[in-house]
Length: 139
Length: 76
Image (cartoon, chains in turn red, cyan):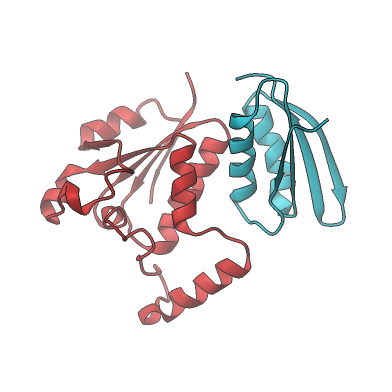
């Protein structure tokens, strides 16, 4: 069986979404299967137009820190989240959206990028994904 | 002989790895993929990925900060 990485994407912060997608695409590139389970603030990033909207987890300074980091990322040749997400999907990465978060945050399927989501599930779905995984992370 | 070339010059982590994986997927069995870049960590990580993917590392060349890696696709 193929090795697998599963990540719970709990944070919606821009830098942490970067971590999740870099680890996800990196694992796929090294021949692993990957599933990302988006829950709580992470699910906000799967809303239509929401992927790039997260604040910086530290030194956001009302968006000033975020702007500066984005500028530096561009200069360093770091790709945008949209591109990493497209690559993640192209390489066969799986995305699961948390149904409980949808209920609590009053998010409907129509609010979400349904084209990116493979499955809607709860804790059992995640555990089933993670029980055979070699790498499991909570971001 | 090179069948597919990919230039990742100026690109940072994890782009060279991703582009390598995409090129290998698109290649036919027996094809040689050549990837060029200047991201230091990728020079050692691409060969690691090639091994993990069960493909053949043909060679790694360096010229200053630039590197060129050739990979033969030996399995689907």
